[in-house]
Length: 333
Image 1: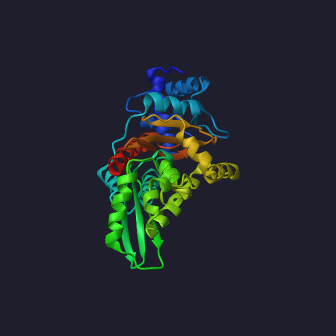
Image 2 (image 1 turned 90 degrees about the horizontal axis):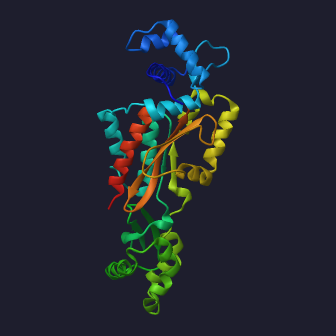
Image 3 (image 1 turned 30 degrees about the horizontal axis):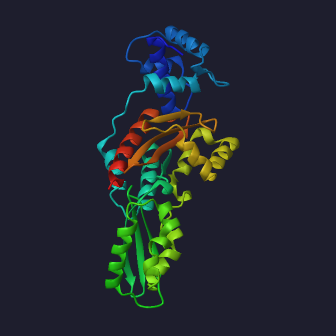
């Protein structure tokens, strides 16, 4: 599709107006928004040309026009102007990354902020656990006979697992044990640790060191980040409030997509490569997905926004770009 300058300006104006109002746009509304004089007749003729080439269409029982998928794609690829985020919006994204209790809570907070700012569905996909390497382990005393084992990865992810014993713990000795654990396991992939941990400590196992025995027996839990937990999204109710999702069939399609977490995650991972990826009418007919990768010490996760075809692409793209950069900084070690 190739448009003339006038056709491009009319299409851009129509898309922006429809995004704002969710109502079909007529020639009068376009004339009021143009920053140059153009007669209603000229606007109607241009709109007729755009309709003929498939960039806009006329909904039933309406005198106005709305963009088609092809029209949205042309707008995104050729006409969309970057939107500058306000200081308050930037501060909200940065604040969601400042309260870092653990990675799970951090990612959920970012998804919640994306949803709030975009008024769509905010999504975060954590890097895959199988590719992640251990940075170090630490312990936090909980009581005389209980500790929390903290696992830190090279891409900034973190988790804690409580371990309780039927005897008091010698914390000075435990400190020495953790030094040995880090010396032997740091820098190794989590999948390798789970598969070889018993062999790596067989010289100490013979000493019947209770903590190491417990660590080895719990390795599949301690050194594993669930792939199901890698997907975090927030804002479903906001998405369902959009007029596009008032029909039962559209709601059913959307909920089916969200409930199948593995399929949804694979859909988000398609065609990544460091750049902003905008898919219009992806998987579900009336849904668009904007995603981009964030980097964490050699591994990549995904940040994204899901909304109707009529989403504010320029604003959503700017929100995602800032969130991606902030996430990469926050999760880097």
